Length: 112
Length: 115
Picture (cartoon, each protein chain N blue to C red):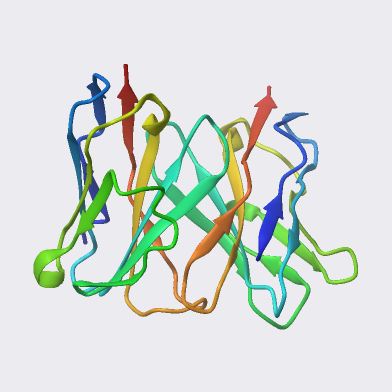
């Protein structure tokens, strides 16, 4: 069975500083990895995905994620955080049929 | 183009009552998924429709939950009778094609509170 772990419930950063939201995964085959963001009263929005290819994946709103096979990690990063990035972030791994397994979510707070 | 919509946005019911949640996927999307997030934990898969057929219902917690997608358009998720532990946010997602490569579009969710 596949699983996802987001070890931090909360991440706090100052505006303008780099941010990292951590994610590790466990799958039996090739990993298909996703990051989503949820703003208050909104649905999950797709940020980026890793299927194959370059380990550094670039996504929406200036976010990027680095796939590390040896560490089974897929951490979300942004060089310079904005207050508007404050939201709930979910990492997910997807099976070939489309069923997704999500982490518990990490609340990111960016302070001015 | 309209996104995935869910109704109601919030529902507060008493234990033992029945609640029906509705999801309208993006037009033309054959694949429809139900997920839920309970107690602020991870978002868990409930089931997957391809058109009107249940492709995978391995995540349905028990027989108090009934999902339908008659005609392969909108879907309903009925909880009867509701229990306290059913409280949470129920998300619906749709995609054009099945599989890991296809983007799933999520609705805003229905927040269910069982008192």
